[in-house]
Length: 479
Ligand SMILES: Cc1cc2nc3c(=O)[nH]c(=O)nc-3n(C[C@H](O)[C@H](O)[C@H](O)COP(=O)(O)OP(=O)(O)OC[C@H]3O[C@@H](n4cnc5c(N)ncnc54)[C@H](O)[C@@H]3O)c2cc1C
Image (cartoon, protein in one colour):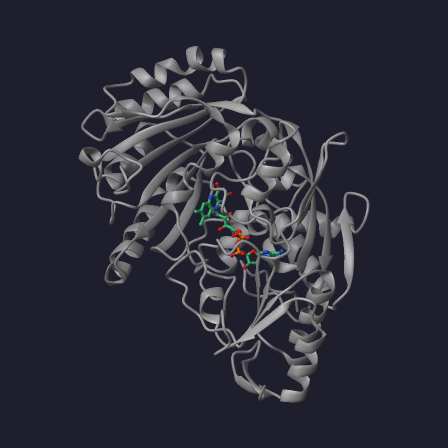
């Protein structure tokens, strides 16, 4: 090929000579693509249609050796670098214009040690890859609720799913990683090796290097679990319904996890045609214990009004994990997702949530009250970088819309809602739903807490002083 036109880390344009590029590409075990190569346009599509970018080169790594070479090549030539696990980052950080993308999608192997209850997971595996291999043994690790999401991005910023109250967050189940750092070295980090780095990786995002392999603790789960999902039409009783859900959940055992979802019944063949588009509130609740006990325990949630649809019942854990998949396809819609932890879900907070949820900018936009607590809150805030561990709720504004002409309306609605709810929050955001992270350091400091944030800055200065890994919720190295 000819020379490569690249964007530098500082944002200027530069040329990397053909001989150097060919040498790099020729050494890879995996494949690489530049503009015009077959597959280039398909490969640069990530989940959020708002992030349309044209990298100079994408490297589909086959193993740690390719990752090491790619990190070294980017660093030596000062090339803007993006790292892609599952490609589901809502902020769109796993793709860039003019830079190099380290794409780990082919490093998706999962090996389970049933006896030791451990899973060894490739840096590009999806949640569904892990569930498939672990559920065969009736085991699972806490990940997220859409099986097409990448394990890497999710875990590095925390990772909340249906097992959070019983088994904690994904980062809490993490036992060790293999990571390629900015100097191109492959090292292991765990509670006994490179401990400080391991602390920072449990919440600190993609700031410190490229994870080639994760080791997770597994727990007995399922294989059958129970879903309680009545769909209630939104009306003048919705505030009362949400209050009842709040009170009900405050007494539930940790086998039970719930998200109160404001949405519209999707315009999708999986739903009855006559109901499609109807605004609803769904106190969607999962019980991972005995299904017979679950149906009795959760019955009151099915009697909070007159549901127009009810998807409640026992189902395989893998089916639960993939239930949302058909509705969240790659590149289908524009997205801007922002969140805040709520210390307080009093009647005033509920009224505000219901009022805003009534004027969502698009039928696809979801407002979710995640009920927290249990194992995820028992972790000391200083034990991992993640920070917030004492909130009882997370409010996530999953703003999704079809028409790019609505960009401003949708983002403005989200930001106004987020601002309005600040008095009910200790500040910060859950950094897997950070909007575009526009608030910069202020958002990170509030999300991690000042003490954890200062520690993260020190770690960044040690492991990535030139900020090679900057396309993320970026922690700037200290001066
Ligand atoms: C449909 C959908 C459902 C979601 N559901 C949940 C949920 O239930 N719970 C939850 O907690 N979050 C959820 N999220 C948010 C999700 O956790 C984040 O978007 C996360 O970034 C996705 O990870 P990924 O690997 O797919 O992302 P990518 O876009 O591939 O990567 C995101 C960032 O992670 C870093 N990164 C990725 N791979 C690596 C690696 N191997 N080594 C080092 N850094 C890496 C990079 O900084 C990259 O920019 C959901 C998102 C979507 C789109």
